Length: 616
Image (cartoon, rainbow, N blue to C red; front, side, top):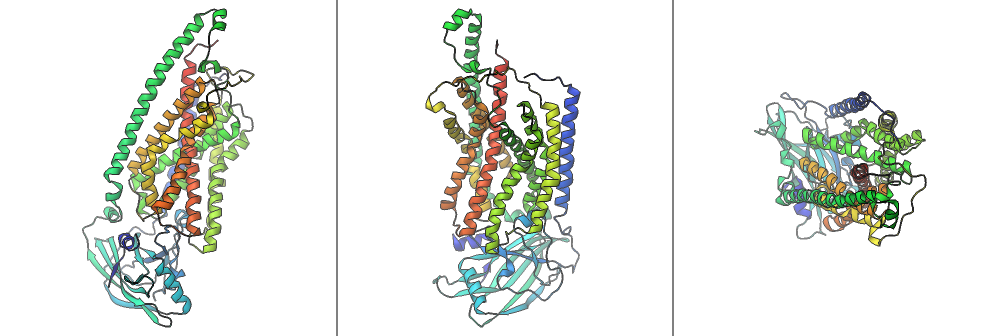
C-alpha cells in the first residue's frame, strides 16, 4: 500500500495660529522624509531578501541537491511544530552541512532546517537504497505511536520547494488497533534545463511498530524532464478553486457596492443637512442680539469654541495615531511587495519583509504622532517620541514572550532563541528609535503648528444631556459593524490559509481591494457618527472617532472565537494559547489602524465644516 504526500491526502484522512512656513520648506521637509523612508526600505529589503536564498537555483549535472528536514507536528495544529529529529528518525550516512542558517523571519516562524545526509545529485537516479536503521526501544515505539495516532505530518525542502508526508498510518477498520510507520521515501523530481521545477514524494513500505524490531529506512530518486517553467513551479501548491471561488469575487463586489452606497449616502445626507444648517446659521447672523437670544440655538456650530480642544490624554492619543499611520503604511507596502514579488514562495519572507518595512518606515510614526502632539500643545515631546517608538514593539514582544514560555515548555520549534531576541531588540533600538526621532523632529517643524479654523475657548463648554443612543459608548460599539462586514469574508480566507488547512494565501490583489474598502467604509461611518455627536453638542469627537473605527477589532476577535470552535479542529494548550494570543495581537493592531482611519477622515470633515461657517 502506498501513501502520497500532500495536504489533500492528509486532509482526506483526517477531515491657535499657525506660524507661516514657505512652500519650499514644506516640500523640502516632505522630500527628506520620503527619501529617508525610501532609502531605508530599499537597503533593508534587499539585504533581507538577498540573504534568504542559499544559492541561485542553478545546477549542473551531478551537483549536490540538499534535502532539508524541517519540522513535524499534528496536522490539525498547524503552528505546533517540533524539530523533525525529535522523533527517533535517523540520518543518512553522508556528511556535510549540518544546519541551515535561517533568516530572521524563518527563525521567528520556527523553521528548523537540518541536513538529511541523503546523497542526492542533480539528474542522477538513485535506486532503492537503505540509508539507516533504528532498533525500536519502548520510548521509540511510544513516540512514533503518539505521532501517528495524532496524525503527525512532516515537512521537507528540496531547492526551496516544500514536501509533506505523514509519519505513518492506522488500520482503516480499527483506529485503536496497531499502528504502521512508513520507512521508504520515493522522490520524483522534475527538471527544466538546469533548474528544479517539481518535487513529489511518495511514502511507501508500511511497517508495524513493535518493541525490539528494527526499522530499515530507505529512499530512491527518479529524475524526469518537465515542461514547467521555473517561475511557475510554485503554482501546484496554490488552490485557485478555493481562493478564486465565485463567493470570494461576490464578497469583493458586495463590499465595493457597500462603499459606493456609503459614500453616496454620506455625501447626500450630510450635504443636504449641512446646507440646511448653513442656511439656519446664516439667518441667525442676520438677527439682532435680542432675536438671537430668544431663538432656539442648537447644533454643531454651538461647540465651535471647543471642537478643536485637545482630547483627554493627548500623549496616548497621539501615540495611537502615529502608530496607526505606521501600521497602515507597512500594510500597504507589504501588500505591494507581495503583489510584485510573490513573497509567499519563500520561507519567512513575508514576516522578514514586514519587520524591515516597519523599521524603515518608522519616520512615519514620528512625523504624524509628533506633529499632532505639537499641535495639541504638548511639551514632553521626547517622552512622546520614545513611547511612540516602543508602543507597538512592546505589545508584540510582550505577546511573543508569553507564548515563548509555552513553546519552551513544549520544546516546540516556535521557541525563540536568545540571539533572535537580541536581533529584534537591536532593530528596535538602532533602527526604529533613531528613525522615529527623525520623523518627530520633521513633524514638529513642518506641520506641528496649530492651524485650527476656530479659536478654542479658555473654559470648556458643558456637555448637555442627550438621548442614550447618542452617547459616545454606544456610537463606539455601533461604529465597527459595517467595517467588519466589509472584511468578514476576507477574514475567513485569511484565517483558513494561516490557521487551518495548509493553504497558501496568494490573492493579494483581493487583499489590497479589501484594504482600500476598509479604509473608505471606516472613514464614512465615523464621519456620520461624529456629525450626530457634534449635533448633540458633544465635542468629544477625537477619541470617539478613533474608538468607533477601532471597535472593528472587537468584532474580529469575537469572530476568531467562532472560527476556532466551529471551523477548526485545533486542540491542546500550546495551539490554543498561540491562536488566541496572536489573534488578540492581530485584532489590537487592526484596531489601531482602523481607529486612525476613522480619526483622519473625521478630522478632515470637522475642519471642513467649521472653516466654511461664519463664527463671531
